[in-house]
Amino acid sequence: MNGDLGAALDLYSWNAGVSAALGETIGHVEVVLRNALHERLSAWSRQRFQEPRWYLVRGLGLQERAVDDIRAARTRVARSARPETPGRVVAELGLGFWRFLLANHYDGTLWRQTLHRAFPGQAQRRVIHDGVAVLHLCRNRLAHNEPIFNRPVADIHATALGVAGWICPVSQGWIQHHCRTVDCFVQRPRP
Image (cartoon, rainbow, N blue to C red):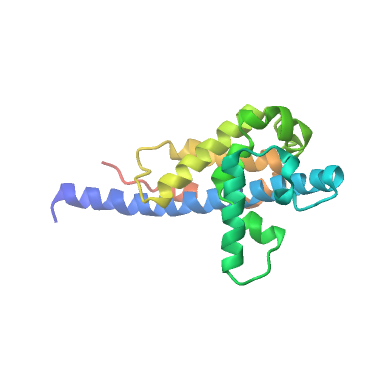
């Protein structure tokens, strides 16, 4: 086999492995994030609107895009022929939905009223939003099988652990313990 082709295939193989490992880590963080935000929104909605299913409340001030995402999530749950539960709806909402709930648009409303409580380890909404944005963009790149070898994998991994730690240090520790990204990263083939 040609040396250049062998090196390219080694890099391709490594890229696939580190992509899978990083995707798994980001997936764990996404679950921690959505559960924390859902928990805060449910408690706040229950107290303010007497309705724990926050995604049904019209007074939340959600942008049209978020309302559309919720409608689509509820439709997917209905198609599954299983009863709609908050957990099923929340699981159908993608990382982009949660990212945009942390955007500047909601700073004076949802953020200040409830979402900030989901992040006891970080008080700055912008820092949290930017960290989640990094994970969202990376996760989309991974989902489309785009190369990751030319991205700052170690920084993305650190961001994932950081976001998890802002929410729950115990979850961060569990994710770090089960994470394969560092092991894969150090195995990168030399050019």
